[in-house]
Image: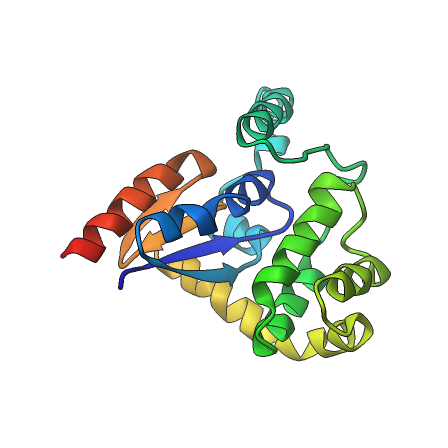
Length: 196
């Protein structure tokens, strides 16, 4: 069974949009999905890339485009009052959630808190609350997050080493696809790999 790797950061609006449909798309073609949190800021620093919000002409378009996508996908979307935010804490906590077998519900809870509810996910209390909603001990997870500093660095570096320059990044084997609008191509590659 072929695997789609999904590298994402909670600060990425397009990663949020991809997260709302990637499971169903992977299941539809009989593949497996591996969720891989990484630090988008670290990717930008390593590759010299910039966030769309930092490019004057792209910033207003970004918000409009995300609203269009959310409408098409039928998912909640509201631009957060605080954007961008530092996502190191929720990303490190994601590794703690993964260790407990709860990465996927945790990821959805953090995305919902930020991109649907507009909550500040750089705040430990918000991360703890979202983790609790995902069925975890939120306070314990936040306390555990500090132990995953190196894991987050390593996973981010792996993505860079494999060619990533933005989020979301999808891999099917060594074939790379970057952007929510490239998910369909990634799914096609996954289906083909499953038939091989």
